[in-house]
Image (tube, rainbow, N blue to C red; front, side):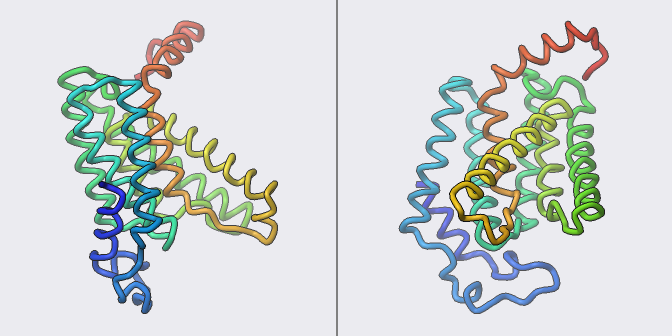
Length: 235
């Protein structure tokens, strides 16, 4: 149900949400017929169903699943808007930040799966923001083109509130791997010969889901690393 609903919502939101700040909406955006339920809505529904099923399989049925349903719904909206219009509306990012902060507070006072100290959300948001800014500056200086949009940077800061420093780095790692695999597929399939632009929003959203889904598998790696390197001071 969330797939078709996401298309309906994206067709109803103000057209200005799907434009850059200095742009005026196109005729397509103003028409309100931006996303078709067939097939986009059904494909999106299958994707979010698979994400929720996988999360439940790895983490079990827990109260946190309520947060995940809300978060995944927002990530679906972000992925669809960024994939088609290369825009991540600020309104969706703010909603992700609110959900992430509520989750962080709840996690800190309960299971401490992601947030183990009061300053973890601040470190996660700051590091997610700063790392993408540095990478974008590097891409601009070396390759003469932007590496990330400001929407991607704000999204990483928003989810950093939920993940803290350790896991926001995992999100970045997964984002790099997922985008690289897709890029290689496009190159070898002949679809990327003339140069392509890949919006990072969908890859970041996939990485967020993978990080949540595989947390129970990732945590032992952190423990092993700390033991081998004797880095007990890591947050």
